Image 1 (cartoon, rainbow, N blue to C red):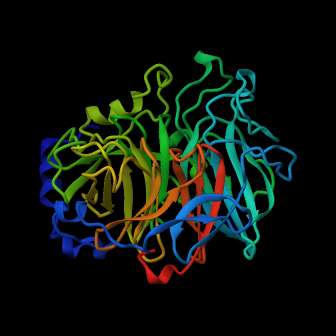
Image 2 (image 1 turned 45 degrees about the horizontal axis):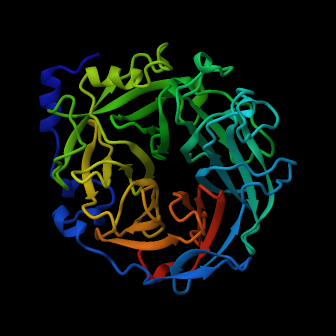
Length: 447
């Protein structure tokens, strides 16, 4: 159904004063120029630091922070498999008193093509090598006591997101399939309960769309799932489940549009902190037959009805009543943008809260999470030495960690997530395949 001009105008007129909206009011800032040029001291200067459980220097951190490293690519897991490569999206859960991590592996090949493999138990596609692993963590030593494959036979498991009901939704960042020699079509989301102790039955959540997925984030108040798409021309989607918390039972998929501006292009020439009213247009066919040959098939459905375009939407996290997403190549300098969406009865409101104008401060924002103190943790995936950056609640950017892995300094950070008690920040570095647990005096700074 195409939104009529009358509907567009009514939606455009519905936006109230931004200060009256709910959400993270501390991010109501001044002009973008002031925050793009403002650098916070954060937690202080970064210095190379040795891991607490090895003699290696793998990260640079502020004074007073320590870390352990574990879950290395190739390390034997307790199910007998070697730890797969390409660590990516991740979330932490408390399960019956245990601390658990569910971690993606962005593997692009399979066993018949010489690639690494996450294969154990039921497999969605025996020709695909991606999936997830689950690690049970000792809360004192911050090292895994058990680790095992928890989803097998998927591909390019890039990001995803946790759900309020205790599961991880992992997303395939590809629409390849039988035409290229795989046994099954790809491009779907799969749900992995955090309490699973063995590989789960891999059920593709087809109602959530077949496209180049990146991340998901769930509004705990409604159960609505928001989804990002990693393409130079990408859409922002929401999935309204038929029954909240039961994703496999289907639902309705929609794409964000900007009220009053059909086919709005958010990639360049954006005005910061200007709230734009949002409408949502329906995706009539979330599993298009031509998705493998036309990776934009689903997005084009929404675009034809007025859907908005973003520049490589990647990270997504829901916090303080708002959705935060990163546009990795967005902005006039193409260094990246951070967007905030606030749900509302008339569709909600969207605004740009940060755009990088300096690649030394932020470039290629990817995975994100909201910290216990309300700021954003941003994983970089840029062309140079990689950082974990922070965006404070008063709009300042700061450096929190630097990749210091020898020969892998340009490998991306991924999967930043805090433990349920907020005391530990877990994060991956993808290239060497490492997972870190970082601890320190969080209350003295923005995280």
